[in-house]
Amino acid sequence: MESAQKEEWSGSIDRVILGATRAEGGTRTRSYAIGGESGLAFLSEPPAGNPLPLIALEICDDIDLWPAIVTDYVGDTARDPPAWAAAAEKEYGADLVRLYLTSTRRRGFGDFASLRRTVEAVLSATGLPLIIEGSDEPSIDSEVFRTCAEAGEGERLLLGTAEADRYRSVAAAALAYNHALIAQSPIDINLAKQLNILLREIGVPHDRIVIDPYTGALGYGFEYSYSVMERIRHAALKGDADLAMPMISSAIDSMNVKEVREAADRMEMAVNWEFYTCFSAAVAGADIVCVRHPATIPRLKESFAALRGASVPKEGEPWP
Image 1: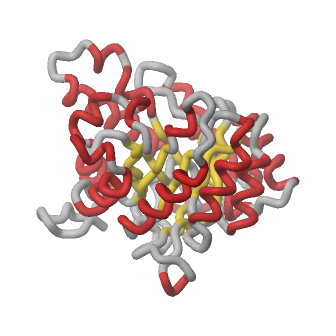
Image 2: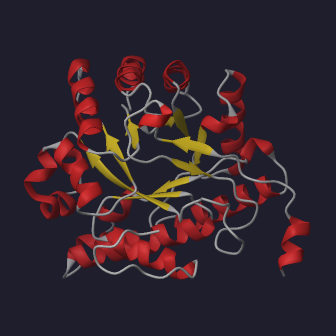
């Protein structure tokens, strides 16, 4: 079987570096080199030094637009993004923090100075590499991404999100301040490839792009997401350089599906829904899976370690 895999796959996934330690010009306590695979997830030996699929905890700077099932669990910490980020690292065991700047989604937003303060405070509160999600309003994209990218200069952030009809602002910020970016397309391999080509045409190199094929929640379109992720990874391993980038998956609707809303134990159902969606996405090839409920993190870590045959650390010991 091993020789058959070597004959079948002629390509490999490009590496993308996230985070920069002090030795690398930043202030992170760790950095990651994601990608580099030359076979399917969990069916081939991972590249040397490559960690298990990384888990990012998603947080935000305006909890009015965040699932109550999460903010109720996190408590007052949810109103303090730096404290939330610190808890992600020290209490919940996340590998990365994904900061959603939800404050920018309020009508008429224009307080860009507050964004800079928030990004700088979160960077000071945690040593984890940071993913930043900017606005979803094209008219302020340029200023939002420039502000965030400048505040995190030297830290090798992962900025999101570039889409086919609005990618120039985030790409310009990533290029100007040496960050990577997320390229999101709506569950379609051809659209994913097209966006990567557009990004490359304006100068974004391969090793700065992470593909987000968009992830529907389990039972709400995830089977399409899984299929597209598999097809992207297969195409890349067969030599399609325009799809040979690492992938990120975030099943953001898992906290709001009907099965969770109507469950007797909503938290247990939410964590189960998020776990099975993220676990399946990692099997399909995602290098980073993003969760919103902290209780999902240890379940995923234990399952990834078991799939790789690694021993599960005792309580208090670091995960591989």
